[in-house]
Length: 113
Image 1 (cartoon, one colour):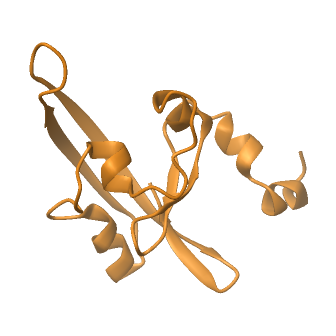
Image 2 (cartoon, helix red, strand yellow; image 1 turned 45 degrees about the vertical axis):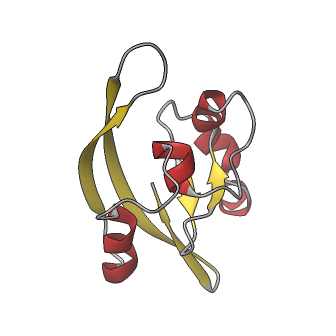
Image 3 (tube, one colour; image 1 turned 45 degrees about the horizontal axis):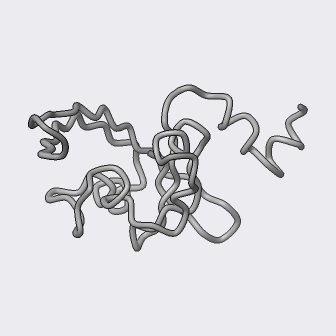
């Protein structure tokens, strides 16, 4: 794949990365999820769903929301967040190490998580 191919369609490269990668818009909608994320959602594409629903099982944005920091500053932002879950037989927790980057596509922009 050459640089021009990547610029036109970065999805094959992003799908090859083992870390979860998503792109969201200012309304918290997922506009892209790589293969790793899709594998965690039973193979179904979470595109169009809210990031807080897919990542954290919430029905509202996180407080504070790390994406808002990126939206406001247009700069990378990193946060480690612990979430609790009561699904299943025993309570569990997960640590999320989120690094957010501002990306620009033509006239639109979105953070990359």
